[in-house]
Structure formats: structure tokens, C-alpha cells
Length: 451
Ligand code: CTP
Image (cartoon, rainbow, N blue to C red; front, side, top):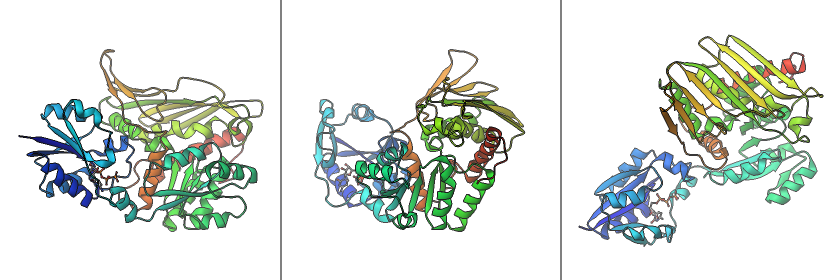
């Protein structure tokens, strides 16, 4: 009996898939079809797969060509499967020509002519209009956003805005994007959504204007310096029926979600303490260091350390203390946040002028989670216990620099995904703004009069 194997995502099942499976079956007597999991696709950079795996399997089954369906969930599995199932022929479409030649040492490799003019990518794009995003602010993070957006289907970065003419022109030259620097309304007219990556003190106003013009908003942190400010923006977004998301990228990284789930699974018992640290020494000429009012370590990195606290202990706290080491201009080069919750405690440390170990430690009554730097991308974490030899290691998948995950979430929400935004809820973002307000009051010595 000649066994054939083929693999694919089979999203939005189409004629190209059907014809491939038909010909694959004709190559032998028994056809095995490997269908990829969401996690595996994410790892390969396909972050917008539409159909859940059960539906994709069901669609392959319906063709009647597959004698056996398996799930593909890790790199290196093809070699394993070929040996395990005693496969004679491996086949895929001609878009992969050459890519799987290495499998020739295990079985015959056949590339079948790809059916022209159809792909899941095109079908996904056709389902929804491409979301046109404009970037506000053309500083350090804008180019990263641009390159990460390429991995997310269904979006296009159309233009940018920066009121400073020189920066606008330089960015436009480098990226070949049109950059508006005078008329903000004109810029807004060109897009469906904005990504706000401008200086901290401008986030609120840009977000407000964009929402009022009916645009979806993904804003860099901090969205607002006050609880009332954040609340009013979320209220406004609801009124205008647009998506508002704060770009705390950690919240959208798959590994971070997994770590929170593991922490809450009971593995480490009852969670008692969260310690999070994020420091990055900044260039002395950078805005973080120079801008005593709106720069500094807390506004830069505070969201990262607040996130695991709020995720694990919730929005209500009993007591909060925030203290900083200031430089000669009054800017916080190091800030420590201590929070007492009813059932636990948490510490967050951030620095732009002080260096420390960037760990996240979640302590429980039975064990603890240790996520080393860069835990905010969560590529790796461990569960440890009393017995020092008893260590469980987790290596979640992570691609690029993490921004693609938040962009993907943003686009899915814009396209009306029905799943609620559990990754970072409006309530959680507002809770962060509340703590930020406490910090600002302390740093500047007066009650916040801004939004
Ligand atoms: N395939 C094909 N003809 C097409 C599209 C896909 O023969 N027009 C083949 C692929 O080469 C692969 C299998 O179908 O062997 C499953 O492909 P998959 O990646 O699931 O489909 P695509 O439409 O290529 O998906 P995407 O656009 O997301 O890459």
C-alpha cells in the first residue's frame, strides 16, 4: 500500500485545497492529511486564520479524499510523521517548491501544481475591507509597527502624521509613505484607524479626536494620565462604535496569556505575590530622560509591570505606594510601585536610569513562576517548587518583536470578532490609568488637572 501525506491550514476551504487533496490521493492508496493548529500557524506568522481547527478538519473530511487526518502542531513533526506512519510520498503545492527537498531522505517528495488565482489569504482579505491604518508620530516605534504590520493580513499602513515637518519628511523619505504634517483632519480622512505613537502627553487628545471622527484607535501607553481620562475615552469609543485599544504589547503576546493561565490553574497554589521589573537604560538625550514632566521610567514602562498585577489580582486594591528616584530635573529615573490587595501583594520596578534584573516572579502557596527577562515578550517561563530539581519549563511561541499580535487583535476587533477583548479589557486599562494618576500626582506634586 502506497501512503501519501500532505499538510496545510485549509482555512476558508477553497477549490485549490480540494484539487490538491484530490491529486494527492491519486498519488497513492492511502492519504494522510495534517491540519495545522492555531498556535502552529501563529508561530509561522499566519496570525489571522479565520476558521477554528475543528471546522478546518471537518472541511478536509468532507472531501472524502483523506483516509486519516492528523494535527500538525510543531516544527520537525513532518519527519516524525513520515517515519511513524511509514509514508512513501510527501506532497504539497508548488508554492512550496524546493522548501521540502530535505524530506527526500525519508520518502519521495512531490510538488503538485498550485491552482491559480485562489488562496486563503485572498479570501480572508475579500471577507473584509482592508483596514487602512495611519500612524500618528513617526519616532522610534513607527518603523517597527510598519514592518510588523506586514505579517498581519487585512491591514495596510496608508500614511502617517507628524506636526513636526522635518521628522515628517525624513520618515516619508525612509518609508515612502505619505506623511501629513499640517492638516490632521485631512490625515484622518485617509484612514479607518489610527495607531498613536506620539509623545505621551498627546495620546489623549489624538485618541479623542480620532474617535470623534469615527476612527478606531490603537494608542501607545499610557492612553491617559488619569482614570477619568481613560474612562471618558472608552465611553466615547462605545458611543461612536469604534474599537479603542491600549497598545500594551505584552497583553497580546501568546506566551503572556499562557503564563497567566498557568498561574491561575492552581499549579502554584493560591497566588500571593507578584514581583515585576522592567528597566532599560535610556539615551541621555532621549525624551524619556530629558522630558521631566512626561518622560521618565514609570510612564515609559509602568504599564508592563502593572499588567501582571492587574491580571492576577484584579482592579481593586487596598493600598498603593509609589516612590521614585528623581534626577536633577525631577524626572523619575527609577520608580517602585507597591500594591496591597485584599489577598495578595505586588511590587513593580521600572528604570530608565537604573539597571536591575528584569524578572517576573509570581509566588503561590505551592510554588512559583519565574519568567526571566524579557518576560514582557514571554518567550520562556518556569514553574518551580520546593524541590529545586522539580522545574517545569514553558517555551511559548513568539514571533518578531510582538507588535504583530496586538495589530492582529486590533484588526480582528475592527472586523467585529465576537470574542470579548479579554486580553486587556477596558476596565483593566482604566485601572492602569488610575495607578498612573497616583504616580503623576506624586511626581509632580499636584493633583492632575489634565486628562
Ligand atoms: N494550494 C493549492 N492551490 C491553491 C492554494 C493552496 O494547491 N490555490 C495547496 C497548498 O500548496 C498546500 C495546500 O493547498 O499544499 C494547503 O494550503 P494552505 O496553506 O492551507 O492554503 P493557502 O490558500 O495557500 O493559504 P494561505 O493563503 O493562508 O497561505
